[in-house]
Length: 451
Ligand code: ADP
Ligand code: MG
Image (cartoon, rainbow, N blue to C red; front, top):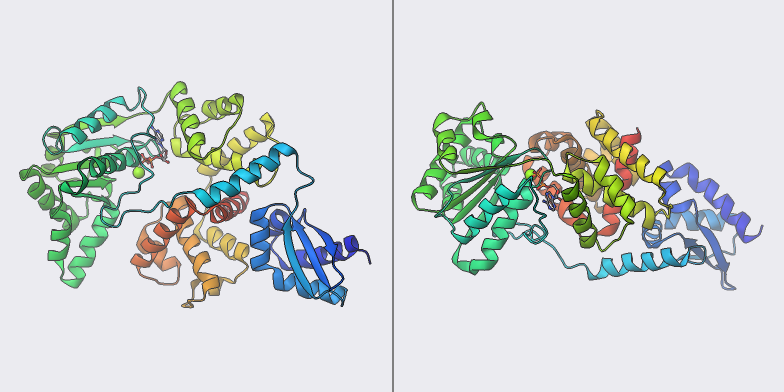
C-alpha cells in the first residue's frame, strides 16, 4: 500500500468511529504527508484547530489503525497543510493564530460583575438608542443625582445589557475606587434571595446589595411576581435611593407593562428617567457591522456587509452571530464567500431562531460531538473529558432555549442551580478568548439546527 492508500483505509476506519460532523470538519481533507525511515508518520490537517482537535481526541485511534495496516508505523505526528491554500487564505490563517495568542484576557470583574468588553466606545449610537445613550451619559457624569433610577427598555438583542454594563465600566474607570459599582442580572438577584431565605442568611444579601453606590440590575421583568425577591428589591431600592445612590435598570418592556410588578415599585421607576431602545435603521446596522468586524480583527467586502444589514433588521445579537459564522466559514472551512453562500448562512440563522429546538436535541448533539454517552454527560463523574461537554450543554440550554438555571441543573443530572450558573458563565467567558472552543460551539449549533 502506498501512503495515500494507507490513509484512505485509515479514514474509512475512523469514519465509522467518529461522528459525522466531526469527521467532515476535522479529517475529511487530511492526508499523509510523509513517512520517515524510523517509522514516524506525519499527518497533514487543514488548519490549526483541526490539528489541535485531532491530536487531542483521535491520536490513539489513528495510531492504532495505522499500525494495524502497516506494522512499521510506530509514531504519528501532525502538521498543518498549507500548500493547497491560496496566498490570501494563508495570510488569514496566520491572523487567526496571532489573534489567538495576543487576545487580551477578558474576564468578568468579580467585584463588580462587569464584563470589560462592554464599553461606551464600542457602542454605536444612532436614532434608535440616542435617548438611552444621552441619559446614560448624564448618569455617568452626575452619578446618583440626575436621573434616578435610569430605566432602559427594549426588545432582545438591541443593546440594553451592553449599554448598562458600559455605564458601569465607565463609572468604575472614571471614579476609580471612590464609587462602588455592582451589576447583577435579576435572575441572579432572585437566586440570591431564595438562597438567603433557605439558609437564613438574609443579612448577607442585604449588605451585598445595599453597600454599593451604583446598582445595575438587568432584565428586571424577571423579578416581577416573585414576592420575596420583589420585596427585598424594593427595600434595597429604597435604601439606595434615599442615600442618593444610583440605580440603573433594564427591562424588555416599560414599567407599566410588567403586569406582576407591584404598584409602589412601578411608580418609583416612573419617577426616574425612562428611555427606550428601538430597532436600528440601515445605516446604524452597517455601522454596527463595521464596529464588530474591527473588534474581531476581520474584514468583509462592502456588499456582504450590506447583505447582512439588509436581512437582519431586528436583532443585533443575530447580526453578530452571522458575522461570526461568515468569518468561520471563510477562515476555518475555507469556503469561498459568494452571495449565495452568505444568503444561505443568513437564512439558516433566521430559520434557526424560529425553529423549535428541544433540550434533548441539544444534549444529544453535545454528547455526539464529544463522543461521550448520555449517562456520562449527566452522571456524577468529575473526569476532565466530561466537564467541558457538560458545561457546553448548560451554556447551550441557556443560549438557545433561555432555560432557567434550576431547570438546567435538573437536566444535567439533578445538579444545583449554582452549578448551572457557574457552567454557563464559564463557557460564555471562555468563548470570547478561546477560539477553538468558539469553533466547537458553532459546529455543535450547526448540528442542532440541522437536526
Ligand atoms: P439586550 O441586553 O438588549 O438583549 P445586548 O446588550 O446583549 O442586548 O446586545 C446584544 C449584542 O449586540 C451584544 O453583543 C452587543 O455588544 C451588541 N450590540 C447591541 N447594541 C449595540 C450597539 N449600539 N453598538 C454595538 N454593539 C451593540
Ligand atoms: Mg440583556
